[in-house]
Image (cartoon, rainbow, N blue to C red):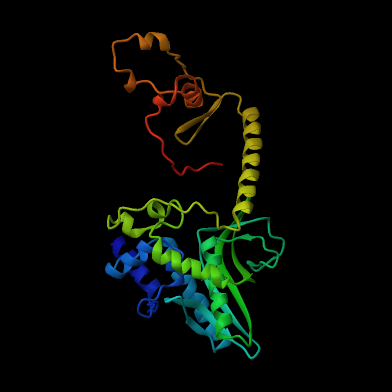
Length: 333
């Protein structure tokens, strides 16, 4: 019964949202993702499904209907088409409003959460107007909006162009956590050479656009239709990276302070769920390496070289100790 209920909810959330594309054209969202995902979507009718995606569709429908009721002449899913170097982009702007002096584009997003650089001071009826740049945007969302702004400027060169990201999300900053409506204006457009580079790379480089894209975000990988590809870029294109890193370090500092207080507050230990936390006594056994080396066993199965002393071994005994040299991407903070 419940599976049928969820399917019906999901179908109703998607009602009226079938997008069409010109032959050979790339959608803006697809342009910012692994090209193999777009290629496989042309062959297989498989869509990613999640509660967050359902919420996004519902949010879009609510906002679009509201804008139509209030302002009347509003265009949904406005076609944004651009051709350069033999490549074609076909984007769909969620909402578009044309006035006598300006045009307004609105991209609607409903992510799991939205990180803020600071606790917002002016919230009225659950609305945060982000004029001070306190939102840490998902780089894909922001780049998408910058491309849409660029395309609107080409379509309406005689008018002022304004583009907004309109969020409904759980907003967080350290201990602050509140679900809000957030309006954030995107005041810069992507440069044409950057857009050309994105298009060129899309057609020439068939690799993920960020390290965990296959495992975390690709329905074709999860369905076994793609074996995945190694992430090869290594470039940092996220303007928010420094802000995120600062927020991470600040949270680390807060957690360290909390841990210090916990060590003072918990004198022994206590049960937290099924886990015992606090000052827990444990038995530690230290093995005698010399006696292990004297055992009649295959030592490779039990012993490893200390990573801190690899360079020292090579320096003292030569490069013949090196079995393999390779490069790999690792996450480090």
